[in-house]
Length: 152
Image (cartoon, rainbow, N blue to C red; front, side):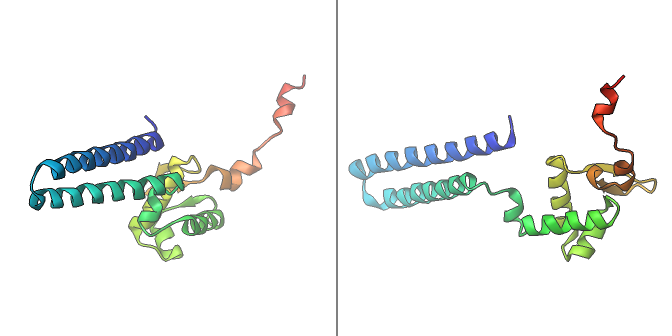
């Protein structure tokens, strides 16, 4: 199941759970004393509110990066740095050059890998290197016109 569909399903289930909780609590309020039912109603209302907030965030196309304090601007800085680094970059380089924590840099770089903009390679020393195929100079130099392959 794709991540977006899984997220949507989780949000939908949260809203359904909240609505069911509120409905049961309304019935409880009509049949039981107010003391326990009031707190249960507050719980159901908070659950509904949080589900609606999550649903609104999902509908606006927010990603997990925004919750971590990093976003599109930082992603552009990472891509710019990769462009100036011959298409190869480590998380530590990205953290230093883009004024991010190593964790934030890894999150951004891993997100770019998930989007298909980069690959992960391992250097001889064992460090993780993020490789942006579209930014490699040697890759551009060897590019050829695909139509030439069709000509006799």
